[in-house]
Image (tube, rainbow over all chains, first blue to last red; front, side, top):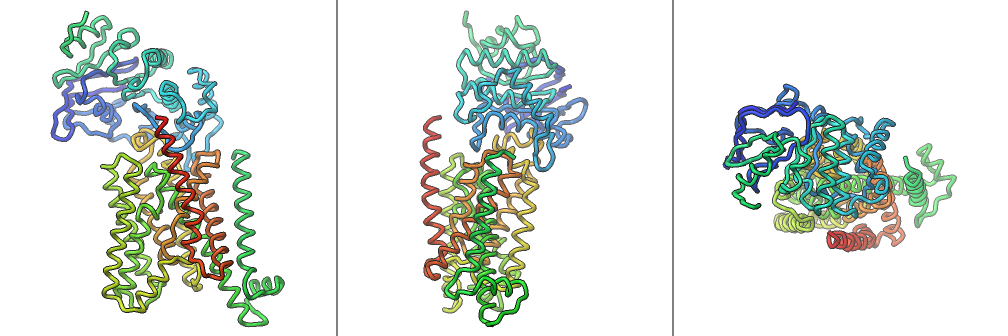
Length: 237
Length: 335
């Protein structure tokens, strides 16, 4: 579904990385690279918000920047690293926002919208949170709700920009487990950027590693740690 | 709609209607209710001065309802777009921008007759307001802090005020006086054509805001979520600029720079309404603004027109803003 060909990604004048070929259909992929190597820019390029200097990114054979915004919202959903809400929204309201692309001009939720929210609440076990105010939840709870919101949007591709950045070890593992389960059960492609390499080798189907201005995809789990250590010049254990 | 929100809307509607009736019927000259109905329905009166008095009261009441509503809707959209609970056409300097436009026309002598009817005044008000918005949008790229944006807005306000004062140098005394009185703010004094223009502009532009409902709902999550939620960002920004600047400028041109309604009403409505859908919040804010507008005008009239409108709105609005700042601080402290 997602395909990249001969990409050169830049930020201003700075050259970030090159990517010869990448084709992903389903599974959980971790995007790893040091600060400033272009992880967020890559995710934004998949969204069509940043246009690569060279090459093209396609979704189901169509260039992302040529897909209309309304259509794109039914293909890609996003979770950012730390989402603070404007307003005292209840968790229920936040989850319902995921249905916005399917609603008409007055954003009135349909019965189906409510049903989908209900299903996600059950899947992620959010029942206890549903009537609580989002902004006063803990970081771990917030991130789980945002993942829920992305699931409610019901897209084949989910992008997460450092979803685990502010989470403790336990919550981090929980989150990745949920993502893993989600990609398996619902046949989705999920890409998340992260600096927490200790959680990836058990649950991820692939590693997208940015190193020396190249992005390479490693799909053999046993190689993950070695590749990362080599790239970062670490010699631990 | 949720029960609590239905109750809120009903109470506000009844309140606006009651105050409207009171504002039309109450006054130094007491006109029997039966005569009031007769005059309003037939346009004729036993005592000819009665019809003038009643027309004056009716017009200023309509102006207060529409003007208050317009400012509140403008403030709501600004608060949500800038994700800042203290934003509003006044604090962000948008009203000042409109004032500068008006001043340029009145004081600069661009208008042949010194009246507030002309298209040129409305147009220059809108231009002034939207120029300030463009400047704010440009500057907001470099601003990460909510309070900084407000300080910048206030500074733009001072800057345009300085500009206006400079224009005073070239104006003659009567023009200056007209401008100073206008600057105090009042819902009074619109004639029939002015009222019709005012009402059409306010209602039309408020109606256009239905096209921002989905975008504003998505703004709860932030700008970086808009595209992935199917919102065209450029379109939303354009609508935001048009709606907020036209509404704020229209009210400013006809009623003067009125402070606090645009910031206090959306603040309260967002707080007490259960629904977070702007298909509900926009009309609710319009009604809330209408309520504050007409009650302020009633207080002005109870003081025998001696209190300026802006004094009354400040009495209500300023405490609400201080309370919001305290609440904001608590929220940031908990992060």
